[in-house]
Length: 90
Image (spheres, rainbow, N blue to C red):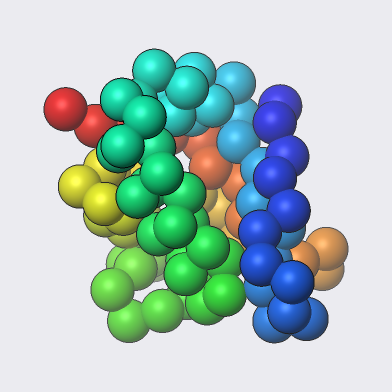
């Protein structure tokens, strides 16, 4: 599992990628990955933001579109971590 510290503020969550999500991120073209990582910084600042929707009525299981990629993630408030389990891009 890959862990990336994004942002520096207290309000940012730590971001980690499950192996399938990390693999999808790694194969992104460089320009897309740079834009994607920037979008992930914004998501880490507020993982419950208004553009991010809960999955199956579970507020901590969410889905969003970041730089054209669909991401599914879990939020853990106890340890301020967002775990990405799926990243789909075309």
